[in-house]
Image (cartoon, rainbow, N blue to C red):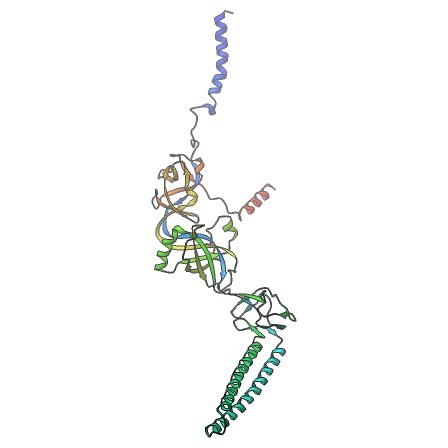
Length: 402
């Protein structure tokens, strides 16, 4: 075979695989761009204008407005305890009884001494009256008259001291009945019937905390002090407080915004900013009628400064960050997206308040941004099922497979 014929055969054989490769649908045309395979499924939301509160969040501590350590004022044996630990008590309700026998005897003794000295004083007064009459007639000397007058005055002082002793004994007898000085909830009981209690002992017999109303103390950055004072001068500032829930700890809800949060008002602003932390301390007063706020507990606090009636808001998940700043994907009328820079005012819970970049009524992408580029076509996809519905769906598939 001539040499040039062999070259033609070889080239023809090589052209067959090349032709087959070029006919493959995956190799046809130029490389596809991002999103060229069709519309990108996304979730969207509408830019809204609505009233939004301007708030400050903090962690606070519940404080009892009144907390009393109950101690005995006399020493004696504890005769009875009239309550149980943790009981709600009212002001004036009996709490303890100390054996009153020794104090009754002391009172009787003081009254007997008073009666004796009173009789002696009355006799001295009668003698003084007679000696004064004799002195006027010159029958007794001036020294005798002065001596009798001094004895009568001394006995008058003795009677006054006796009266004070009787009053002191009567008070000691009254102190054997210990009553609640305030209304509140009792704590741990540190004494029991039969114990010897001492006057003004270092350890209290019981502690009573007032639970309604209560204070919630919290601190906010000092830079907000001018705004707090300005709005407080206009009206009492509202503050809410509640125990942290599982959703709060996971960041799913705004701190203190749970339905169980208690509502109160700011009643105290400290007179100085803490130089070590740069914060200002405030206190809110809460009615706490259901006793949900417990003294010593940490609570989530939300201080409401004012309400912005015309805030432009989008879901916080719609706002993305880039090297040039925050942006959102806005869906146009032809179902394509454009990247729109936005200005963030603040975040309020799961909403982002924007100061510029979007208009009310526009549609923004809230999920699926990672697959988007400017100009990409999008389609609305169904929201994912709730976690409660997922087990049922899975069970249905298992029954179908069976």
